[in-house]
Amino acid sequence: MAVPPRNRNHAAVRALAYCAAAALAGCAGGPQPPDWQLNARGALSQYERHYLAGDSALAEKEFANAKREIARTGRIDLVARAELLRCAVRTASLEFDDCPAFEALREEAGAEELAYAEYLAGRGKREASDAPLSRLVAAAVELKTGALAPPGIAAAVEIASARGWRRPLLAWLAVQEKRAAAAGDHAAVAQIRKRIELITGSD
Image (cartoon, rainbow, N blue to C red; front, top):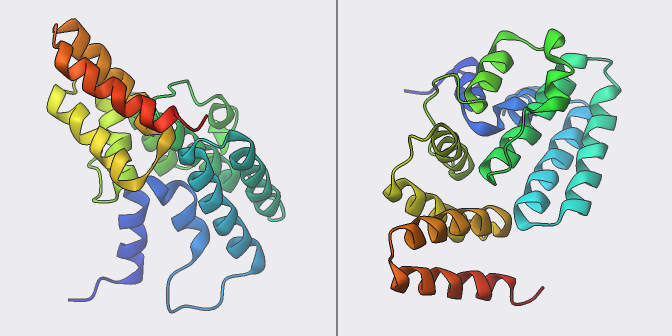
């Protein structure tokens, strides 16, 4: 049975990219979205790609482009969603903070965004979608709250590895290395360090 566009949109909302991409993209098969939506969606996608690849300068340039497009609407709530997306991508890379840019706009955010912010902070529950980034965010939240077991860490490493996401991969390998060292597993530590050296060898 086909899923109605409204339900498809809410499914996307519950994945990581709901914060901005789903809200700004428009529904497939509907009217052509206005230029600002297309431009903002493209810039947010590029932000995500560059950030996960480890290129902060290009990532922040694209995010600034996205905010400039969204600002054309005068809608602070959409800017808040974009800031929440940025916080989620950082969370996937184990860069935890209080999402200050989103918090500054909290009063303009909707209930769904507020719930997602609570989830990122480790104070809420949410089922991850099958999307790799959504799964990586879920693993990061569990790690933040102390609920992630070693198999979950290994799974997060493989998600980042399979996608070629350099920044989160290095972060998750560092966690894995620390756990292996604490357990006295010298063979695992050596293998993890080889992977890290391979990734950072071109620096």
